[in-house]
Amino acid sequence: MSEELLGPRLLNALRQIPGSPEREHIISLLTEISQPFLLDEEVVRQAAWTVKEASETIEQTLPLLTLSQPVIWLEYPHLPRQLAFGVDESADEPGLPKVLRVGCLIAVDPEDPTHISIFVAWENSDGGIYHSYAMLHWRLDDFIKLAEMSRKEKLTTSTAERLTELAILSIPPGFRDEIMVWEGREHANEDGDSERVLKTKKDALGEHLFLLSALMLMASDATEATEQVVADVPETGLVDTYIPDTMKMVCTVSLSRKKAPLFERFRKPGFYPGLGLEPVLRWKSP
Image (cartoon, rainbow, N blue to C red; front, side):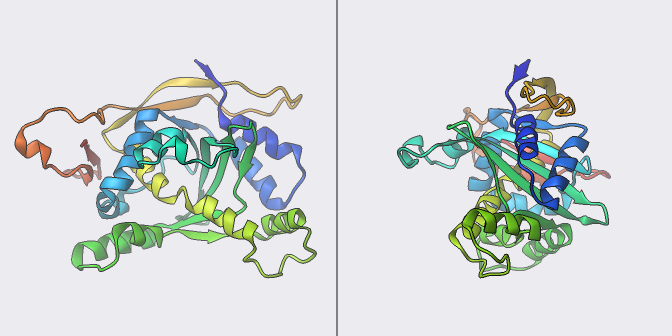
């Protein structure tokens, strides 16, 4: 199976424009990936649905969030989650390109395994490939503290608010310099709350909740890795423009609401820790 994946084309696009040390580091990490992942539309729908309808189960199982590899590339189509969130295509601004596919480079800090950094990129319907200049950061210690607090205390804020507060955003100096070049500003230490800076932070933050849900879904008994998807590598003349074949993640359960016994209808969907010596995520379908 061959597909025009975002990963190889992002790598090619980043190499076409000389930039900051941070850009070069992203390129280096992309070439280190041993196994990229592509989420099937059903996985995307269920991950988005869980954020919308069962976010408290994400909060309760935060301590079980782990990465199987130090660097992961994860990409997924945007439309299925947009529909799962209840946003119709007609809500998009007319005349503006639509987001088709999103990709995230997720890396564990080699000096601090509890620190995870995420670089967000996406493809629009106009054929353009874009990326956020802001980095999304996770502190796994904060995840554990929130999960413990939610079990022991009655919290007044919503689950979505508490989960969103886990997100840490930063714009590395090199990326900030690139923003200043785009804006025509002379000094990178000027007021950083420009419209472009706010938007790029919003672009990174927008993937936070979905990624939490998607990574947990990938680690649960609701998904499995299937066939490899061979990427169509862009013709660039760069012989080292390469990302290994991508594993496609599909669901082992269906999102469709089938008839069920009465008690099944009221069963809470979402993530639950398995009962055993090893931490295992069980997923209950709606």
